[in-house]
Amino acid sequence: MQGMPGSVPRYPEPRREISQRGNAPHEPAGATETITIVLADDHALFRELLGRVLEMERTIRVVGEATNGLEAVSKVRQLKPDVVLMDINMPIIDGLAATRQITEELPQTAVIMLTMYKHNHQVLQAVKVGARGYLLKSAQAQEVLAAIRTVKAGGVLIEPTIAGTVVTEYRRLSQVAEPAHGLSVLTEREIEIIRYVAAGMNNREIANKLAYSEKTVKNYLSNIFSKLGIRDRTQAAIYGLRQGLIPNDEPPE
Image (cartoon, rainbow, N blue to C red):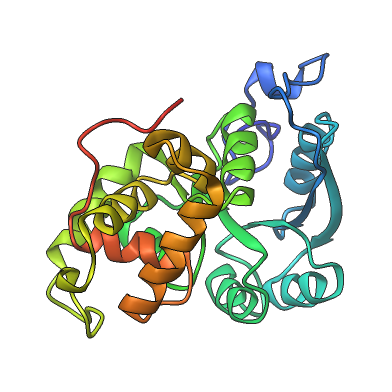
């Protein structure tokens, strides 16, 4: 995320609209639930700037910070935040190892990788260890806020500039390590829901798309998880991507 002074190596020049914004960003209608955040990054100045931007939102509260992967795991165990913004390259243990530990122990906590790295293998590794989001530090404040809300609602979000290459890579690997059961065990409606999960849509968006209730969508997802032998919607999204199940139309704004 840009916004770091130019004297700090590793971070680009600040975006004026982030570092000098005088008013709190617009909050979506109905956004009343507080989202708790842990920031995990070994650069204190970046954490400070990001924390200030996030706390301009009345519905977001930073409850803890970590300077390395081991501390990040400890903070999440202690604070049980809704979302972790995690750097990849950190001391002691890196962000990928920390994310794997967090998602295994506390799957209700969503991890977003917020990093300088845009290499395909880094993105794939992040998804494999359970990250629900992947953003570059060049992202604007509103993109980070949107990602936080997306993963909190159960969605998956990958940096738009690299999402296409990730889909291509998953298709290339589609013959490797697939679940024991294939698409043949799913109904047409279940396959359609997998498509929308792979596109990063949350339960409410899928319900609106199909004119269902959110409870109905949750029931469908439970059946899908059971049939495919997977544990959560992140694995369902990965499965959908690997199968090339991308919807023909765009998700709702």
